[in-house]
Image (cartoon, rainbow, N blue to C red):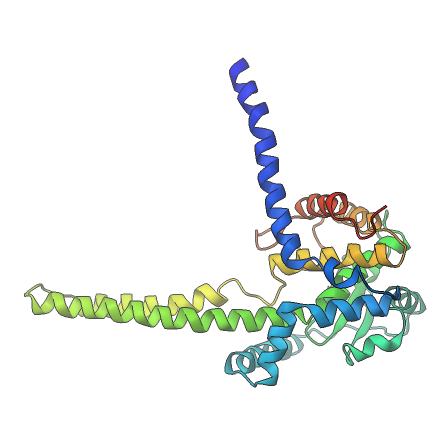
Length: 312
C-alpha cells in the first residue's frame, strides 16, 4: 500500500504537466494576447477591433464567403434553415430591448456604438425566464435572462464577464465558422467515404470473379453505410452549438477584455465558479461536447498565471 501512494505521488506532477502542455497549445492557437499587447490605444473598441481583424479562423471563413465557396454557401444555408426552424417551432419569446442596465454593460464592455462597425446587426436582448442563461445566436443577438441577472453571487462585473464571453462568440461569427468548417469536413469525408465505398464494392466484384459467392445486398448495404458515415461523422453531433475550442477562445477573450478595461479577469472566473453547478453559461452542457466549467476555470487560472495581459 505504501508503494502505491509513492507511485501515485510521483504520477500526479506528470499528469499536471501533461495538462499544462495542452493548455499551452490552446493558448498558442487561440489567445488574442499577441494582437492587443502592443496597441497604443487602450479603448475597449480598439481591443475588439484587433481581436476581430486578426483572427486566423475568421479570416479564413470570410475569404470563403467573399469567394462564394460552395462549402460556405451550403453552411450559410444550413444556419439559415436552423434559424427558420427555431422560429417555426415557436421560439417567439417576448424580448425587451430597452434595458438601461444592459445598455450600461454594453457601453462599458464595447466602448461605444462603434461596435456596429464590426457587426451592424449586433443587439443585446433581455427576456424573463427563471432559467439562468446567456446565449448568442447566428443573427448577432445576445440574450440575457432575468434568471441570470438575479443569480445570487453574480455582481455587475461578473455579468460583464459573461457578456464578454457572448460578445466574443458574436463578433467572431463563431456559428458560421463552425458551420463552414463542418461543411469542409463533410466534403472531405464524403470523398473519403466514396473512395472507401468504391473499394468495398470493387473487392466484392473481384471476389465474385474468383468464384466466391457474394451477397450483393449485404455489399450494397455496407457501401451505403460507408458513404453515409462521412455525413454522420461531420454532422452527427453538430447542433449549431459552439465547439469545445470556441468556448475556450471566448473564455480567453472574456478574461483579456476585463483585464484590458481595468475590471479584472478574476470576476469572470468567479462567475464561472458560481455557475458551475448548473453548467448553463453559453450553452454549456454535460454530454461531453463541451469542456466542463471546472476545466475552463483551471485553464483560465493557468493562463492568468503564466501569460498575464499586463506584466508587472
